[in-house]
Image 1: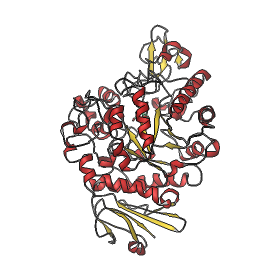
Image 2: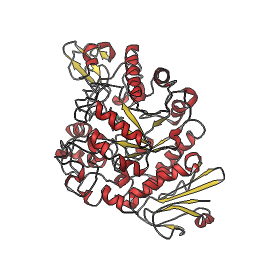
Image 3: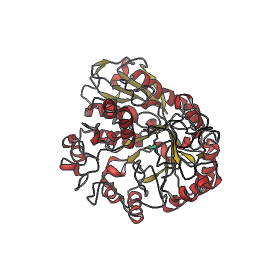
Image 4: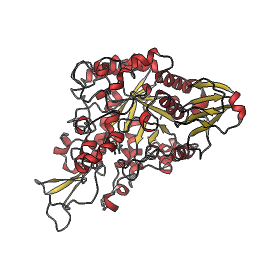
Length: 537
Ligand code: TEU
C-alpha cells in the first residue's frame, strides 16, 4: 500500500461535464470541450480534476443513473476522447478522478434485467395489493419526492430506489454485486485514472430488514449501515491495495458524523482518504432543504470548528462550499459580489483539509435568475414542484441544484462561449461581467484570488499541516482563526457581512506580514463589508 498522502497539499477542481465546455455545438458539454480548457485549469493551479459522470446514461438524473459503467455516453464523446483527455491532464502534471456511482444503477443497466437478486425486491405490505397507495414495503420517502419503491406488475413486487425510480439500489449484501463493482473499478484504474469520488457511498449497507422510519425517514436504516466499514475495507483490498500509483478516494456521505468520519478516514483502517460531510451546508435550512433560513454564521463556524478538531489527530477533512448539488456560495453565504466570493474562498482554503473548487466558483459565479418552472431542468426540482406547486418556486430559486449547473461562463459572447449551439440550460445573463476571459485579464479578479489561495497551499506548509484555532466564535459577522505549524503562525480574518466589523484579536497581528488581502488598509482593526485578509508571523 502506498501511504504517501500527496492529496493533503492538493486542490481538487470539480468539472460538471454537461455544463463545462461544448466542442461540437449540440448544446451539451463534452470531453473534447474539457480538453480544450486544460491550460486554463493548469493556470489556476489545481492538482486534480474530478469529473461528474460521463458514462452511458438515460440522463434521468443527469448521468447519476448509469446504464454502462465501462464506456462513455456518446453525448460526451468516446473512450478514445477519454484517453486523450487523461493523457492531456497527466501531461500537465495534474491527476483525474472519476465519479463512482454504485449505490444504484440505471433501471436501463443490463444488470437490472439480468440479475434480479442484485437489487432490493420486496412484496407489497401484508394484506395489501401491489400498486395500491400505501402498499409500499416501507414508508421511506425518496430524495426526489414520493416513495422509495416502484411497483413491478410483472413480478408483483416492488424495487427500492432511494433516488429516482430510474435509479434502483444495488443490493451489496450479494457478493456478486461487490465483485462486479470491484472489477469495474480496477478496469478504470488500469486505464490510468487516479482515484474516485464515491457517490453516496455510506448508503451501500442497508439493514436487510428494511424497517419503517419515523415520518417516512428511513435514513437510520441505510446511512452508515451495519456492514459499511466491511464493504469499504473489502473494496480497498480488492481494488486499491498494492497499486504502484498513489490514488485519491473521497466518499460522499450525507449524514456522516465526525466520529464516523474518523473511522472512515483513519489510514490504518484502509477505507477512504477523506469524506464529504454535509453539516456546513445544512446551517441555512430547516428539516427539509427547501425550508429556507438565513445563514447562521455562528453555527457555521461551530460546525467547521467541530470538523477541524474532530479530524485533527486521525483522518482528514475535505473542504467545499459548492458542488453540482449546492446553490452557488457567492449567492448563498455571500451577497453575490466578487468581494464576498473572495472572502468565502479565503475562509475555506485556509482551513485544514483538501479544498474542492466547483467549476465557476473561481469566477464568483452566482445563482441563476430563473423566472418560471420551465427554466429548471433538475429532476429533484421538477419533482418537488410537481408535489408542492408554484409556492415552491422561491425555494427552488434559492436552493435548486440547477443553480450550480448553468453553463460555465467563459466569455461575454452569446451563450458565454460555452457552446455555439443552444445550451441545454440557460446561461446566466451576468456572463457579460462574470467570465473567464475578463477574470484572467484582471489581476484583482476572484480567479486570481483563488489562484493565490491554491499557490499558498502549495508553498506554505502551515496551510497544509497547521493546527487550527477558531477565534471570536460568537461574533455574528467575523470569521477569524489561526493556524500554527513549525514556528509559523497564520491569522485569517474575514467579514462575512454587509456591515463594517471590528476584530478582537491580539493587536500585534495587525503589524505582521500580510500574505493576502482583498482591500487596501490591511492594518485597520475594522474590516469593511466582505473584506478578508491573511497574515503570517
Ligand atoms: O447526491 C447525494 C445527496 O444525498 C444529495 O446531495 C442529493 O443530491 C440532493 O441534493 C438531496 O437534496 C449524490 C449526487 O451528488 C447527486 O447529484 C445525485 O443526484 C445523487 O447522489 C444520486 O446519485
